[in-house]
Image (cartoon, rainbow, N blue to C red; front, top):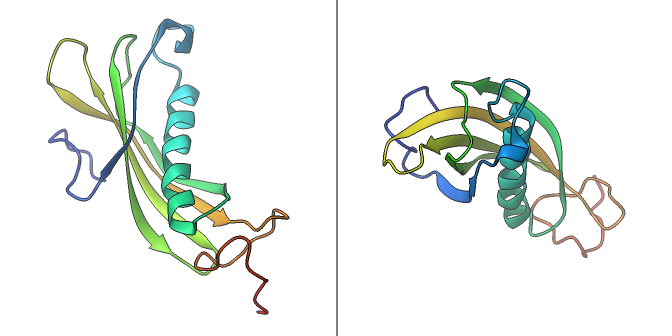
Length: 139
């Protein structure tokens, strides 16, 4: 998750690809940063849910960096990588790349680390390696 524009790192998984639309712009005409972060959160939640085999919740976003703006019509690709698994939490590295429409050039636009907690059926933290419908394990 460095600042280069060589393309995604080996091991990063393409999780979401979407086209930035006019409805997603801020008053300056660039794609709103909140829209981009929400796409990143969706991608990270997919990776977390697969790892935990169930419901998860975002509890933190660390080291969020915006490198450059995204324009209307850009193809935005969100890549994820599982960085760390704790007892109840997972840390997911997320990078967003833009490809200007009708070109092959890609540029890293945003990166962050998302932390998720695995949840049981009642919305309480559970061990990541415990299926969501299993009986709770005493601490």
